[in-house]
View 1 (tube, one colour):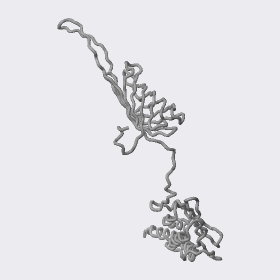
View 2 (view 1 turned 180 degrees about the horizontal axis):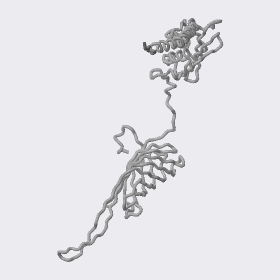
View 3 (view 1 turned 120 degrees about the vertical axis):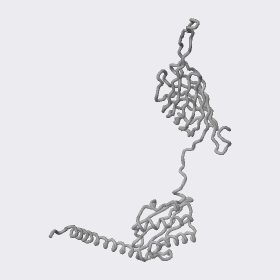
View 4 (view 1 turned 90 degrees about the vertical axis):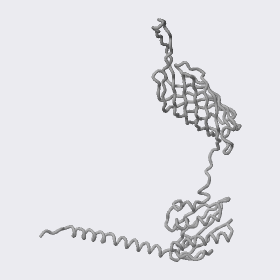
Length: 337
């Protein structure tokens, strides 16, 4: 008779798991029960609280005691006298200007700190948020930062980050453009954009274009500038990337004979080439009136698209003058400077 070994293997496997895992599970449960027993009858001691109203300190301590009870730790009303023995939680309030540091420590025996956590708050009312976090952190021995959520962020944690001041500016300008290798020199163009400037740096975006019957280009660019000083007048350099489109028309003369009257006539053949793609640019110039709400800039700029037309390279070089004015949110659009 053929015997199937699979049921025996399965029974052996399950028995081995129970034999190995069950003792560890039992030990962990006993350890948890033992840990709970250590803090079953704890005392909450109100420590130093100079600069904090007595009623406020007592109310804050009551909030902490209530949080201990929620986690199964039996804590009576806060006391002010240190017991001679046993497990003690001590809450202390230290003031630094308008800020308050709340310090919660575990002591066993009293006077010997075994664990401590602290949190900065803007005012004593924030203990409503801080109490659950402090108790959670000290009972489960985890960082105070890990206890925060969207409803318990304190004013200190949400403090506004101080940064270098800057200003938003609308920019308009006109320029003359030259296309090397082509019959384009001083062709007028325009620019409109926005920038954000600090004393040393600026970032911005602009749309610019130029063209005539034989030549045209337009671009949208994003880039930055570096100012060499923070005076009323400063030279600067910069650069960035752009989406560039351009076209150029080549005119060639052609002679055809009209067989009707046996005469030769001359005609112009127009061949227009165009393309678009990514590009880059570099700029250099002088920024003036930097101490006022307006700016005046003289700038030299070279655009270099990452493509060339079959019969003409596209690399516009422009020199222009640009005016900037503060952007004011809510003011009837960007056209009213």
